[in-house]
Structure formats: C-alpha cells, structure tokens
Image (tube, rainbow, N blue to C red):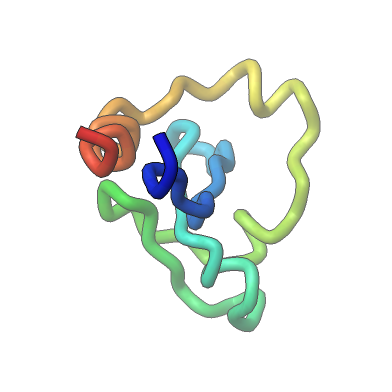
Length: 75
C-alpha cells in the first residue's frame, strides 16, 4: 500500500459541546482567535490548545459529523 499513507492533519479535543476534530493550524493561532472544528463548531483557540484532563475526554461524546468528514477522506 505504498503511497496510501497521509500525515495526520487533525486532532481531537473535548470543548464542552462534544469531542470535535480540529485542523492542526488551530494550535498555531493566538489563544483568543476563533477556530472551527470539521463540523463547524467555533471555539476560542485556547480551548483546543490546552491538554484537557481525562475527565473531560470521558464526559464528552465524539462528534459523528467530524468523524464522518475525516473518515470520508480515506474512502
């Protein structure tokens, strides 16, 4: 399967309204800039730039809209 691998260009974060996927560029903006998840949820960048405690990861559900958008890239 040579050539089928692509670099991961997203990451997941629980942001109080679910666990959403964000592009890696969200890690490089100013903390109070607005960033959008793959499904369109907008939050301030600091919410995705911090590493949340495990309790937040467990409490938030994975956004299936984000999941479908990311997984469709491999089909």
